[in-house]
Image 1 (tube, one colour):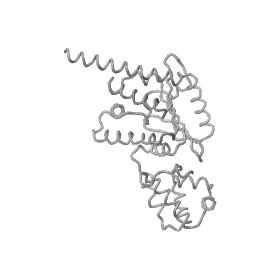
Image 2: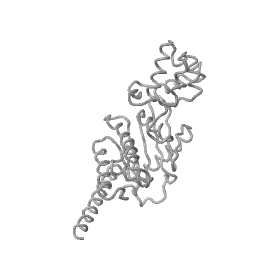
Image 3: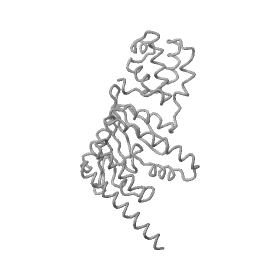
Image 4: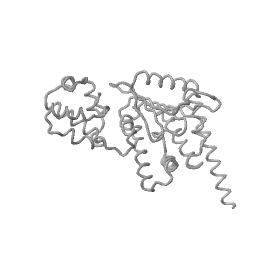
Length: 287
């Protein structure tokens, strides 16, 4: 892994865990290949453990302790290394987003989490779980918003989203919140930070009707796909699955509006939502 793509140990328990593995390996004067041979894995696999891309499994933690003579450190701290404010099925995805060279999102129903504004996120969380306590909603909202820090880098990761037109039309959080959300996306596009396309409703049947997915590529690791269902999700690195998802994304991109036409639709939809908000406010004032 390139140094710039390592997780910050001060921000991620798993990154700290990986950094300790790297430190103990170097103290033992072993290369990644040498440690990998003793653990019955490749040297690149060890590098991925050190960088936080691979999740440390209990059997690897035990072998690392035995080989590096770390007095049970890796076994004892395995649970802490996996701790995350995100749902179990999504925790790895968030860390991978911070390591990815490129990210491609297909969004058939809602704005991808990386692009969501506070008001939009709050509305989505409340819609999914209408009886949860307000403080829980706020904690989840803060965690989701924190993911957007990856856009602080002006170039990496390269981010591309394809949105179904319904995503731009449905007033999640109300028309004012939706206008704000669409303008946020448009601002990122106009800064040349992200690429966004819209799949028009007029397209009818399309390649992405099975549901949302995410594709991520890395400098020194194989690409992965993430698919999600209700309260569940799977990270898949099977080359056949990744190839199929890549083809699906290419087909969606070919069917979608161009980036320029998509930006125009997004900004027009923002104006329409704002007009609806103003009309509603005027009606309340007259009531």
